[in-house]
Length: 184
Image: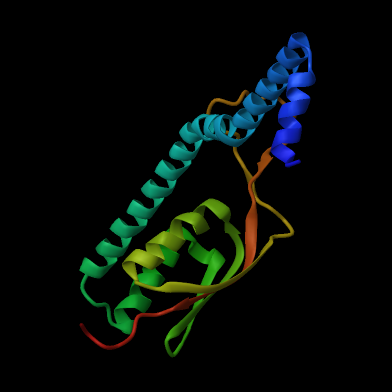
């Protein structure tokens, strides 16, 4: 007796009501399996698609801005190391004032900071990259021990006796690579 004929004999031995129950249970198992294997993963992908699409759009915009920055840097004329040092000195004076000192040794420039404003530092670094074509190699910054007080933001209410808002200040060094002396 083969296994399939044994199953057929057993099926025929079941009452019609039992056959209907076995068919219903098999249908439920088949539908559950279909749901878990085919439908649920597809629905999960559809639900996650808008968020993933938005994240990829943000990533694409970031890549396009980096591409535009790289193309802008490539389009600017070659800068000699002397011009780069001059541009760094100008940017340091404009943005960081007397909180920064520049030391140049070969193709490296080291900027020493003492109590430099975080905002000024954030504005100076892109300026150093674009104007002086200097590439940041290393930064070692620590929060300054005595942060300078700054006025409250424009819309903040001022109350008598309230302490001034402390703006973060930084001490440390930033090492930059100056452009090579070769022309294009």
